[in-house]
Each structure stands twice: as structure tokens, then as C-alpha cells.
Image (cartoon, rainbow, N blue to C red; front, side, top):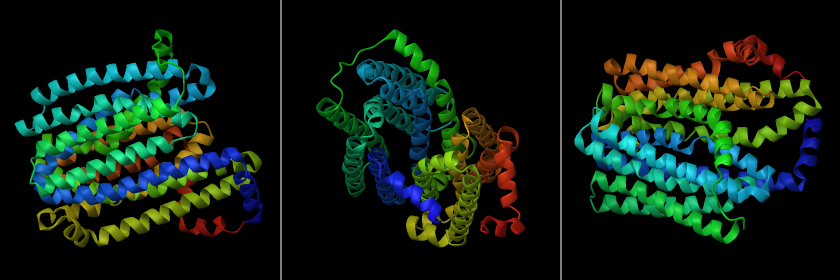
Length: 440
């Protein structure tokens, strides 16, 4: 243990690592506050509308989220990388990325609205609600300014802007509930939140960011789009795994079933932050450990993998056993049927934990393309199982499809795309191998 702590202490003493830790702290804090506030407000909204109307809101949000990934064009990581490499070109990179995102959002909002109004099997109010929420994608283009802060390890201003918009609009949503507002008003509030965030980001950027003038470059645009394509595809596949059920349920079952499914998501997804925070925090530590002592890295990573699986099982089992009571306490009797949905969906926690932590191994061993392939497998499995299970089982079928798809993504797909990781995970399934993890 001392051999691990001493290098860790030396690592944490470096100024760059402190900046990384500070930046990470702001991001983790934002995520935690967003989960807590989101859970409270979401539960309140779900109780206010009931399963059917809340299902329409959930559809609009999920449909917009999936199209939002397309609007982002996968530019985030590439733009941040390019700015970090060439700070003097920040104005050209940011300006090009901004105009690309604005153009993409205008096209996607137009096409998405046409699809919502003509092709989707949802009622008229849900179609209009979807068109309203889609408008938020235009203002989300302001996230481009965050690329500068990420490249300089200074996410504080971005976090405060997002949290300010979240808290202001969460208070406004509570006011809408107290005023007995319509569902369309809550859809408009999604657009308002994006607008408030965009204004805050623009003000912060003009005051603190690069002095380079924003400009568009066709050559830069081609370079950004070429490099970002794999990340765009991976992002779409990931979000399909998380949100496609809320798009399929109204088409294959009913808005009420979508409301039951969407109401339990904040409960299970609130636990996902545990594995995400662990991954972000431990990645630099394991990176150093791999360079200095590959054998110790292997042992420590297997222990981490075993620990995260056990933690996931304990949480999933606890939530599953108390699902009915938890649903009645948080959501009320109108959502009583959601207990069965939560009982199934809680087991996605195990496989999401596994998927997030295995990313450490994948990143450090340069298996980036495998991550895309794995996400595609998960997305295809979720869609296929959704069409198979939702018509007969409704929200419970969607939950079961989600769990199986995450199992395919985090474990089975490794047999094809990352065999060493698959063998490692398979060994951890055998109880008689556990004592050997702790001998050295």
C-alpha cells in the first residue's frame, strides 16, 4: 500500500495535477447538484402531470436529446484538443465550431419538427411540445464556448453558468406547478433554460476568454468534421442506449407507459455518477501506475473492477427490493405500476458501473475504436429488443431491453472487440478466484 501511496502523494503535489483536480472538482460538483435538483424537480413534475402527460414530456426530451448529439457533431473532444495544441488559433477553431453547430442545429430542428408533426405516432399536443423543446438545440450551440475553458482546465465559469441556469429554471418550474401551468409551458421552460445558459456563457466568454477574434475557416471546418466523425457516432450510439426507449414507448405502447418508465430513470441514473466520478478521478492514477508497474496496475485494476461490480450489485439489489415502497414514497399511487419497472431497471446500474470503469482499461490500452463498436452493439441490441419486448410488456419491456443491452455493451461485446478485458471480467465471475485478488 505504501508503494502506491507514495507515488500518488508525489503526483498530487504537482501544480498541473492540482489544476486538473480543481477542474475535476467543479465538474463533479455540478453533476452532483444537477442530479439532486433534477431528481427533486423531476419527481415533483411527474406527480403533477401523471404518467400519460409526463410520458409526452419524456418523449419530447428524449427525442431532443438524441438529435442534440447530432447537433454537437462530436466536436467537443477534437476542438478542445486542437485549442490546447494551438492556443493562438483558438479564435478560428472556436468560431468554426460555433458556426458548424449553429448550422447543424437549424437543419436538425427543422427536420426534427417535420418528423414530429408528420411521421411519429403521438397526439397533437405531444407533437407541438416536441417542436417547442427542439428549439432549445439552437441555444445549446453556446456550449461551444466551453471548449475554450476545457482546453485551459478552467471549467469554473461554465459550471457556474450551467448551475445558475439550472437553479433559476428549476425555481421557475416549481412556480409553474404552483400556478397549474400547462405541459407546453414546461416545454417552453426547456428552451428558456438553454437561452439563459447561452447568455451567461456569452457574457463569461467575452469577459474572460481568448482575445482572438472568432472567425470561420473552411479548411478548419473540414478538419474538425473529419476528426470528429467517430466521436459523433459513438455519442449517438451511447445516447440511443440511454434514451431510445422513451422514443419507442409512445410508438409501440402508450404515453402512459412512457411516463412510468421515464419517472424511474432519475432514481437509477442518479447512481451512475458514482462510477463516472470514480473513473474521472482514477484515470490519471492508473495511467501512472501502468507506466511504472504494469503488473501492479493489473492487480489494482482487477480489484477495482471487482469492487465496482460488488457495489453495483448491492445498490441494484437494495433498490430492487425496495422498489415498490420507493416509488410510492417519491411518485405517489398513480405511479404504483412503476415499481415493477424500477425493479428491473435497477440492474442496469451493475452494467453501467462496469462499462464506465472498463473505459479506464480501454483508454489506457488504446482501444478507442472498440469503444465505438461496443456502443453500436448496445444501441442495436436496445432498439431490437425494444421492438420485441415493448409491444407486449410496455415499460417493463423497455427496462428489460435496457438491462440486456448494457450487459451486451459492457461484457459480451468484449469477447469480440476487447478479448483481454473479456477474459479478465470472466475470471471475476468465478468466486474461487476472488481470494487471489487480495494476496499481493
